[in-house]
Image (cartoon, rainbow, N blue to C red; front, side):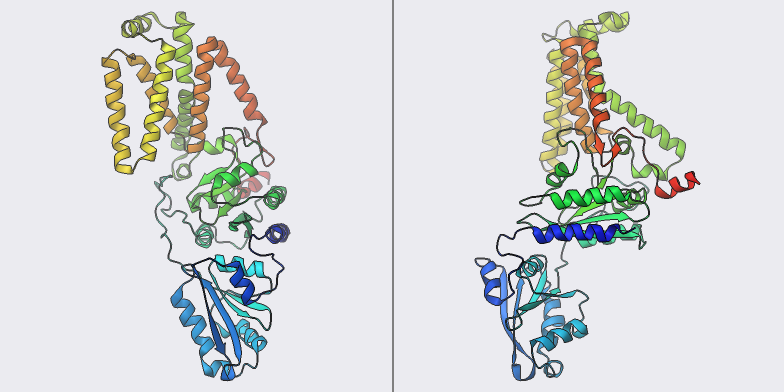
Length: 485
């Protein structure tokens, strides 16, 4: 399957077609042009270097301070170049470059550049350049600084029985983490640069014998068609890849765990990693995929099935409980058992607000407490979330502002939303909860039923790279082949 050459061709054409803000890609390489590109850049460093017999070869060495490892550049690049015993045999710059490319340097990544744009992109990604004005070419040596955040435990997705590593901000480290979990040469990888100004590295990963070739081609075409000023967040990329960017429901899978991305790749999905972002995307995705977690595979099948059913129950409670309570309490009191109705009347007799106003106010207060807990520092945020909920809720009940049943309904609905494995799906459920509550306030159960039908129609219309959003969760490529046999 010749998918990787197709992807590389499309993505490299995209990278080459992006206009440079400082210089065109086809401009020749020379010292003056480089200095002009990086003028008023305080971190751009350079020096002259004379090598060869009697110092007859003049090179221009340049790099971005902080992007390269100074010790490696000095010991493994500059010292061999200035060694008279090694450089004495080089008659000119062409012979020197040929010797270096043939093994004169210990670095595995050294390429020759004749286009200024490519060389500028290499410098901004952590390379050191040896420029020869006489040849009009440069040697780009990867001496990237590896002083980055170490691989740690995942913070958003807790791992009970799985691996404890998570993605970091280095693209190459992330691809290596994925290969540790899927150690096969069939795991293919294609890279490109997105963003006219940021030139952010993006890697596309897929398993050759598991991924759908048409899906791979469709993703390559969409990436090649992207026109961005810069790519510094996943949202800018995600909204241009999905079919319906205005839908509140997530259409791409997110994870910070390499083992989970490797599992998705084995199932035939395609992964996307962005340099500088410790989150991976995977596609195609369907609604059942957002209700499963990686830890389910480490449990007994019966336990896993019960937990999955519990998540679906929590989904229904989080979305429908406030709306159903508002509809029944306001329009359909005959549906409430007599003893429960008397209890509700007794709790609400001193409350001056209607049931609808109570629920709307408590949902807004709950959302404010949640937002405050997320934005504040961890110790303060936890304190605000816990103490704020206790004090505000208890004080509101004692002051006869809201009834206890309204607080119970909102609290159960909020806790149910927190059980969603995907935060994006939880946010979509909260938006649907508010819309259903407004429909229940306006038309009772009829409004809830009508909005539910519209919601089902919307979910049925979503398509994720040729896969229906409501399709059952797909099995792995190997399992599907065994089933077919």
